[in-house]
Image (cartoon, rainbow, N blue to C red; front, side, top):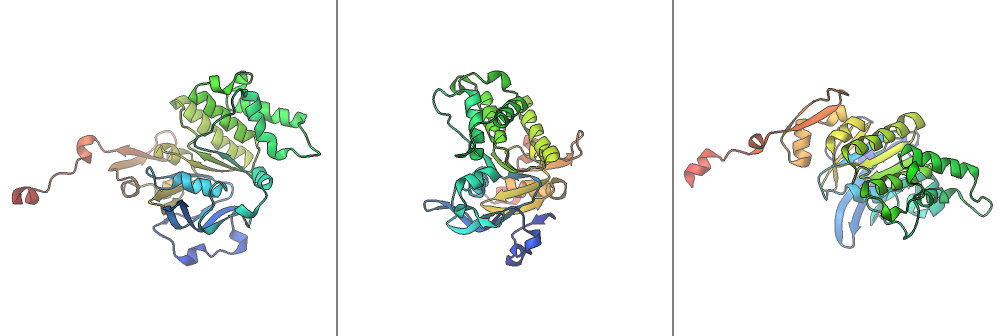
Amino acid sequence: MSARTGHRSGSDNQRSNSNVNRLTAENVTLAYDQRVIAEKLSVEIPDNSFTVIVGPNACGKSTLLRALSRMLKPSQGRVLLDGSVIQSMPAKQVARTLGLLPQSSIAPDGITVGDLVGRGRYPHQGILRQWSTEDERVVQESMAQTGIAELADRYVDELSGGQRQRVWIAMALAQQTPLLLLDEPTTYLDIQHQIDVLDLCAELHEEQGRTLVAVLHDLNHAARYATHLIALRDGQVIAEGAPKDIVTADLVERVFGLRCQVIDDPETGTPLVVPAARKGRTKPVDAAVTGAS
């Protein structure tokens, strides 16, 4: 999908069936009770992309992700998964297609790491299909990928915040869905584990062909790892496209209100945002106004 800035016209949302992606939101209005977060918002998640949603606090990033995952029903418009309105689909069918790591999760009391990760296999269970050696293999592989295999017999409520976050990620991996949505997956993690998690996401995208959608606060992480970036402000898409095509100093100031320089990351060549020094961010007082006062 090409880079796009500003608001979209209605014709932008009219696409031929051959170009429709698996997960889309069409003219959705998202609200909590009477508090509207976004109006007439349309988003397409490119298939086989690693899409990252960025924007300032309270701009609607997590709300959009909740709508895409069926956790929040739009008051207007619709979210489509494989061409069907997601709210009308059976829960298990959605869960076999789309996995979600929410922003905050609470584990049942007294549950072990292995048992919690195993719950990711629930969508694959049925009356005629109970726990199998394949389920066990997937659980063990998911724990190994997230570096928690040695914690399998520990109680989740004994773990640090960072360890718990990796357990939830492992459960989402165990679900083995072609689409995976992650709301701030690096929360609570130190810098090493942040990079480990994002490297894992990149691996899932590049080597396993999964479509990933993540909300990230760190714009430099987003620019380094995303293949498709969506920049939100006040519930509207300000720009979207490949990071190298849309991340500019003007965009960062428009979306985040931050003066900066954008340079090439010396490791990856992707955009790297360097905030202006404190003195550089301080806007000079207009001399004429000062004299008039």
